[in-house]
Every structure is written in structure tokens, then in C-alpha cells.
Length: 167
Length: 430
Image 1 (cartoon, helix red, strand yellow):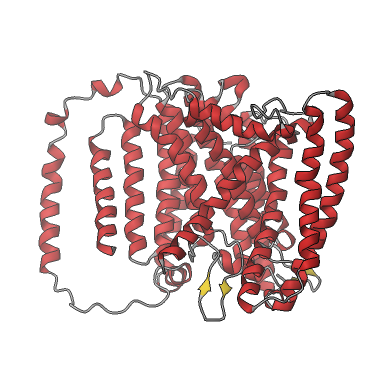
Image 2 (cartoon, rainbow over the protein chains, first blue to last red):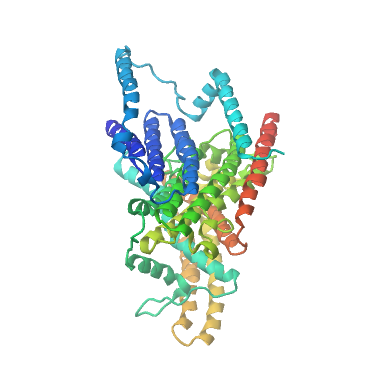
């Protein structure tokens, strides 16, 4: 049962990811990415991490991608816009040569790791709201604060760029 | 977990919410008529019998009409996404109902515990927010896949307003989380059984009135209801995002709206009105067999009295109608008086009088859950009526007003509320 659900979620995540890079309508790409995120959330939930799984749906699929879709709809590309994209067979193949070595490296790296046969038991509050909160605001509080500072800088930057006249 | 147990749980998750739909549609029609001083729909009748039952038949007629209409897919739409959208709308609306705790977990004497809840998630309220944020895509997809300018504008408006109001919704929830110290809905309801300031029930609306205002406003925007229903503003956009939809695909959008109302009402009742808690009555007191029997008898007595009252009101209405209509419509009042008033009243009185034996511990546990369920539904119906009431009394917002309200008023208010609540919780007052 567990296995079946793992393969189901994995297939959804990877399959939708493939759709996201191969569809020609931008909005269809964005929506495929949403499905991929939901599949990923399913994998998190299977690991017992209900809080990250919920956040994956709430933040990535539900908030960030809605903004992306919103912008795509606002741009409202004309119906023939995707016809002007050059032939994918010639033009979209070159990133494969960039990404493939990385993938091969990853496969070798994972194979080279010596993973313990018996995995240590997880703490009882693993992946719950309380457990994740304690990790974030305890052990990892400084990286967390740095990340929020980065986001603040991004917000200020966005306002400066978007507002033509600062008063 | 046995199969029966699992099926029962799955049923609790969404069957109740689905069963509320006909009631909501009837309430909406009759409510709007009441507010606008009309009679409301009363023309549909059962063929052969000729009864109209004050418009109840209309709800049935609607379903038959929508099911038998031709299921048309226009040529110019993006077929896959066009068909996906209504299904997604319905799914997202129903899926939220799964986390609502309808009653205290029922514990039987042999040690088994049955949670009256679809799924018991420790992320409770966050799951609700996550699913409702996915619900935006239904509207966006419908608007985009229709390949129609009006639909697309409707979809755009819906996504913009939902993003804006989800923020204040989340901030309202954060205020509550600070007070209750948990995102789990079961814990939230359990904490609301305490007393605040020594005499008031510690309900969300008492300890977090601003959060309640924020959440309630955002819930109207989330359900795309007036005054925030710009996504389907018929004066400008024909029917907005569902302009191109007909027959049962339209019905799914229509039903999703009402399911959303019921679910949001249940969530609000759970978070702000104490869920299944009865003020002043603890679960431990209620679950004792003699107390359960006492409360049940009280409910039966109330039903008997209220039923008699309703029966006499309907009879008065019937006497007026009998003069106006000389056909079968003239008999309707009498039939309704028996069906809604005297019938339940006599049944309740009979059960009240004939029921002399006590309750066993198992049946007491089950009946306690039933009482708590009724309490929650009563609270949720208050909100359901609020949704209808507001729709028929307020004008629609202009688009910039909607955005200003969301970003310039509700968002700062939510931030101030979170800050103030944090201070109060730290000081130990809340």
C-alpha cells in the first residue's frame, strides 16, 4: 500500500514536471508545475512530515503559483504566441547537455554514499507543527532570520522597481 | 480499522455537507424573497398530486432540469482544462469538510474510540487553508479555458481577490493560534470549553473579536459571495468565469459555492463559536447516562413546544391562503403544518412520554455525540443564514474598493491584532 502510494505520487510529481517543460502554452506549463508540487507534497506526507507537506501546498502550489498564473493571464499572450517559439527539437535540446552531467554526478554521489542499513528512529514530533517550529526557532534560528532578511530585501527591491516615482 | 469504520469516516467527511445543499438552495431562494418582500419560488409542483409545498419542489426540479440538459462543450474552449475546472471546484469545496470535528471522540465501554471526524490531522486548520488556496485554480482554469474575454476577466478578478483575502484570513487564524497554542481543530475546540475572564465561554469570538471580523470578511471573499462576487459580476461580465458552462458543469460550480458556504460556516463555528461545546456544559458531565437522557428529554420537550408553535403559525397562513387560492394550493398550508409543525411535535411528545427507561453507557456515548453534532450544526446554520442575509442586503463592491479594503484596512488590522494578541498572551491575560 505504502509502496503503491509512493509510486503514484512519484509518477505524478515527475510526470507533471515533464509536462511543465514540454507544454507550449505557458499557462498549461504553470498548471502542470502546480500538479507536480502537489505530488511532492504527497511524498512529504508519506514520510510523516505533515507540516512541510501542508506548507508545500499552501505556499508553493497555493500562493506562489497563483501569482505566476495571475501574471501569465495578465500578460494575456495572443493565441499564436506559442507558434512563434522555434522548433523545440532543435532549440530545446541544448539544456539537456548542461543538466545531464549533473544528473550523472548525482547518481554516482548517491551510490558512493554508504547509507546505514538500519535507519535511526525519528523523534516523535518529526514533521509536526511543534517539531518543525522548534527546529526553526531553536537550532536553525540564525539561518531562518537570514532568510527572512533576504525576503525583506526582495520586497523592498520589488517596491522600488515597481514604483516609478518614490515619494 | 475495519472497512465499515473507514466507510463511516469517509461518509462523515462529506456526506453531511452534501446533504446541506438542497436546504441551502431553498434557504437562499426563500431568504431572498423574504428580504425583498416577495413570495419566492412556488410554481413547481409534483405532477399528478399537484402539491407545491411552498417551493420545496423547486429544488428537486432544479436538479432534474440541470441533469437532463444537453451537456454542451463549446468548440472554442480548451477541452481538458474546461472539464477539469468544475470537478476541481467541487473537490476543493468538499475536501475541507473532512477535517471538521463534529463531536467529541466517542469512547465506548470496551475501549474503542471513534473520532467523529473525516481525517484527524495535526495540521488541522492549515490543511483547510491549503485546500482553499488550491480552490482558486478552479476559477482561474474555468476563466482561462473558456477562451472568452468575460470569463478570463472573471478568473483574473477571482484570483486577485482570493490572494488578497487569504492573507487576512491567515492573519485572523494566527491570532487564534496564539491564544489556543495549537493548529489542531480538536485541541482548539477542547480549549474553547474553558471560561474566559471567569464568566464568559472562552470562544474564539470572545477572546479574538478582531480575528473573527477578519476571518468572516475573508470567508465571504473566499466563497466568492456578495459583496465580493466580482468574479461573476453579471452587470459587467455576463456570468464571469462560468459564462461558458451549462447543464451539470454549471451545476457543479453552483453546488461548490454552497458547499463552500456550509464548510466555511462549519469552520467558523468550530473556531469562533466553540465547535460542539455547549457553554457551561462539559463533555464529562454530558456523557454520564442520566445527564444525556436529561438533555435529550429537554430537546424533545423543546421540539414538542416549537413544533406546536410552528404548526399554529402555518395554520394561520393556511387560513389566509385558503381564501386566496381555491385549488390545491389552498391545502398546502395544512399539509405543511402537519409535516413541519404538528407531526414532529406529536412524535417528540410521544417519545418524551413513552421513554421511561434509562440509557446504557454505549448509547449514552453515541447520543452525546448526536447532541454535540446538533449543537455544531445549529451554530453553523447561523453563519449560513449570515451569508444569505449579507448577499441580499449589501451592494457589490467596486473592484478598487475591494482591493483597498483587503490591503489597506484588513491587512494592517490583522498585523496589529497578531501583535496585540502576542503581547496579551505573553502577559498571561488571554
